[in-house]
Amino acid sequence: MAEVKNLAINYKTVEDFKKFREYGAQELQMTKELEGNMIDADINSPFYGIYVGDNLAARMCLYTKEDNNQPIFDPPHEYMVIWKLEVLEKYHGKGFGSEMIDYAKSFKMPIKAISRQNARPFFEKHGFETLKYDIERDMADDPLVWYPKGYVLNQ
Image 1 (tube, rainbow, N blue to C red):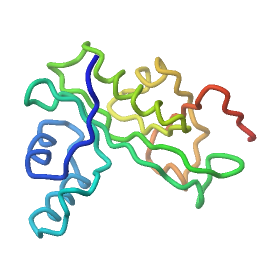
Image 2 (cartoon, rainbow, N blue to C red):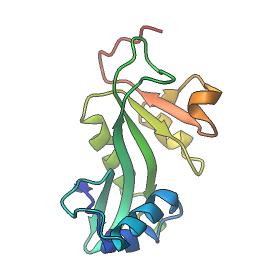
Image 3 (cartoon, helix red, strand yellow):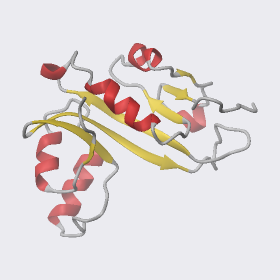
């Protein structure tokens, strides 16, 4: 069983992220803030990962979101968002993606997942369901949602 760790906001993490396909604006912003010395290294980042030795094998962005502007739930309440879940190709098939999902589920909150790179079947295998699409809320995302056991959906 792999250990999911909160990833530090530092230059090593930024360098590790460059190996992933879903490297983009959020990581670039982290780099700019590091270069400007604006980030305190003790601040928790929204990124979590699994290391194999010194190599980052899998990572995801996981954060809590208020359900206020375009609510998903009735009544609106907090939920988790998984974004940029990715396992480097040489580590596929080792269960790291499932470990990341299990870690997110351990918070016992509903989870909205933003499916990228044809990952929909992976999320569905882990109990995620298609979220009714709302163009204003979801924009170009392909959202799925997971509900903790016993969660009652009012809508």
